[in-house]
Image 1 (cartoon, rainbow, N blue to C red):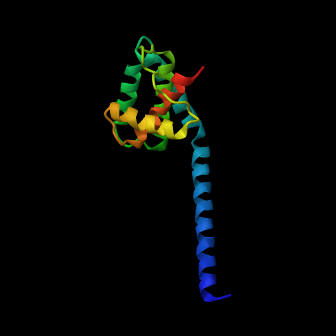
Image 2: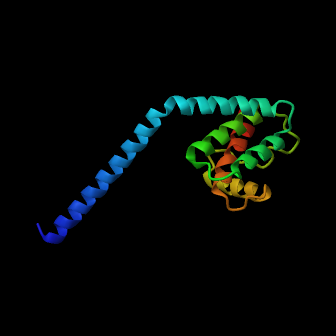
Length: 144
């Protein structure tokens, strides 16, 4: 085996080990914090349902965007905020036209295009966190 092949093999093996260690670390982190994460999710559901009572759906979206604008929420913060929005939209009244033009979830390109356009309309053009957040609108509007 040539020297170049051995170097490539060791570099490849090192990368595989790095990926495995990273995945293991992330898994361990989530396992150690599972109870706290579950409680944060339940609290977000309660907050969303409480906030959405007697509100119009756009107020839920505005509040979720306000929370999104408070800073870098990270993965867990974004997920918790999306849970808030889903719960809020679940109890809030939907004005006429709120769900118009939303594509089915299985139309990935149309869904992504819709999310980007919706975020632009909401004053968050090009925002990936906003695009992930408005997925809650799509899910709630298309739910049976």
